[in-house]
Image (cartoon, rainbow, N blue to C red; front, top):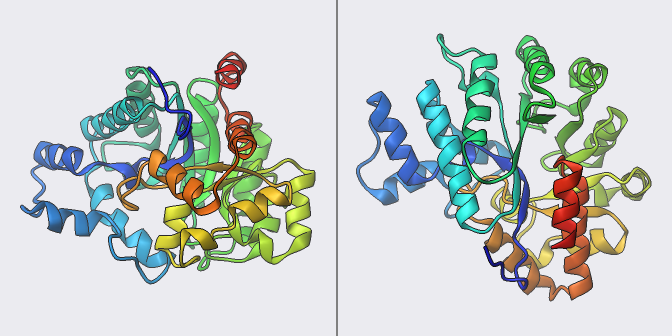
Length: 326
């Protein structure tokens, strides 16, 4: 497959499964489960996508209610994973890491273990090399579910699962309140990713770094504290940037305001990702186009970002070498 080197949209490391179910796939999933959806495409898109912006991250997260309601049986979980990866392959991606929270998709007959097993089977059945990240969720009363997610991750680590993540409403549930979960991930020897520095400030990023995170989801508010920026640089921690998503949630007003170049100039490792293809109505190619147009990125800057993406990925070493040489 040939790629347009002007838009090196090859690798997406921050991609939520439930936020990336296409409208076409959603209708299939609903049909399988006799779930009623709006007849009009426009109305369905309004329920699944942020078209005209939203108030904040919590408002953005409301767009996940419908897609999550479609993922309560094995067949639906398999199909949505399979069709998403097929779409990414057709778009020219060479590698992806998708993430989902098994505690949000299981129903009475579908345990977290079963949910992960079925997603991994779908990944195996598609041509796109892909790692699976299991997301724990922020909340007051779900510590037991989060620890179960870590247990399931231990069973599948090295067999398709590549990391454990913490996602959810960052401003409502501070990062440090999940230290028990972080310790469980560390003790299991599994890489940790934390959504931080998005709805909350740089202190959230510091807490994630102290917890042992090797990558930070978003992390754009790190710039508010030079000491946190220095920590990112010193520890070679990569920020998983998702520009359109951050505009959707009101962190920045325009792509030109996005801190991509500031982060690059300070030596912070960054990669460009979609976050939620459907919720943010985007693609990886669009994300790259926005950044290239906003900052007129040089060839060397493009190469740096691509290299950071490959190096930060959990792809096997052989695949990393192939991606670096392409």
